[in-house]
Length: 184
Image 1 (cartoon, rainbow, N blue to C red):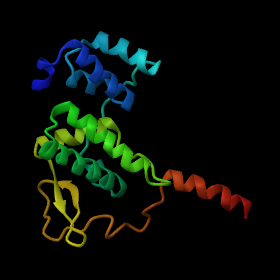
Image 2 (image 1 turned 90 degrees about the vertical axis):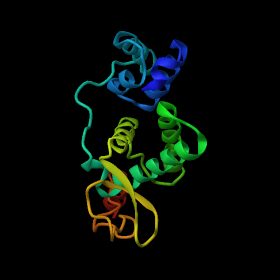
Image 3 (image 1 turned 120 degrees about the vertical axis):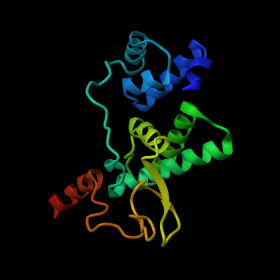
């Protein structure tokens, strides 16, 4: 990205720190900054107090299509695209700002959980840039939702207007219901 070469080291450290605080994986930090792997590992340990998790990144467009992840991904992507079009924010700063706004929205809803990680949000942006995913309007509510690019979208109905039968049975709600069931 062009932002990697333009920013000074202190700005690179600031970006890396913000991403680490949000839970970004090491591979995301390596892609979004010019800092060395060794410097990023040290910074990660300073910020989190532990080594970064290892393993492959969650690379799949299908995750964004399932019911609850789709709602959260669509919210994030709408915010991200608004920032790109209207606020003049670009690159990794648009990702960070959009993710913060997404967190503010989700945490403002009582009983809701954050579903979209910063790493998945980063992948979502990359999938959009690669033309693999897009936002499509729901024919019932008019909201725009994340879909695969090559699917038929003429009569698209979102998961909010037409939720699946088990919608809303998240781990958090299941844990909340268990004590009530045990008392009865």
